[in-house]
Each structure stands twice: as structure tokens, then as C-alpha cells.
Length: 133
Image 1 (cartoon, rainbow, N blue to C red):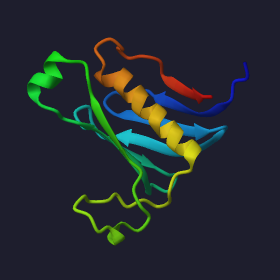
Image 2: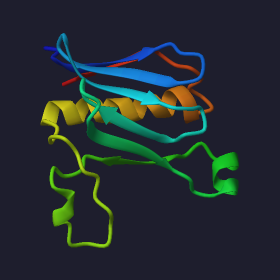
Image 3: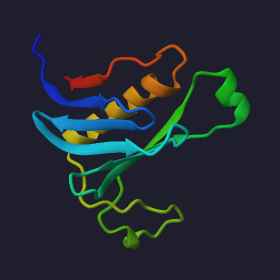
């Protein structure tokens, strides 16, 4: 079996923030620094601090959140020109579109976030997630 690593998500320790670094090979393409424990929006930013994508954990109601372990996540990859949107949904404006490999690492981050912070069974989990084929 041939194993191919697409990218890696590393979690850095911080007392109150959630900080993740996203890599393709040895090159870091994004960072997530969530400002606080109760903030459930995770914004992927490039080295210049420009927005690349956003992961949101949607609040589904008190009873649902307390009595179940199910979470609903939205990954918004956005558009370079969000003003061209014709729909009712507000588009996320991004500095550049992510490549397919970068999007795969962003999905791995969403899985890691759920395991690290929101899953009752996952606890603090593994500090990184590797994506492979």
C-alpha cells in the first residue's frame, strides 16, 4: 500500500487560544488563531493575515448541544470578489482561492477541531492530523 501525505495540521499549545498551523509538505500556508474558548468560528489566514477560509460550528440549540455529541460544521472557502454575489447569503471574501490540497487540509482541521474541543469521546485528542490517500 502506497501512502501519500497531502498536508498536516499542527496544534500549538496556548493557555486560552486555539492555535493551529496548516502545512503542505514543509510549507506553512495558513494559521488559525481563535481568540477565545467560546468562539466557535475558526478563520484560516495566510502569512500576511489575509483571510483564506473559515470554519464555523453552528449552534443547534441548547437541548441538542447538551444531550447529543453531534455537531454541524460549515467550511466557507469564499470568493475572491464577494461583491459579485447575487444570492441572499453573505459571501466570505478571501485573499485567494485555496487549492484542492489546501482544502483537504482545511477539512482535516475541521475534523481535528471537533475531536479536540467538541466531542465528549475525543477529549484533547492528538495534536496533529495527517491527510493521506
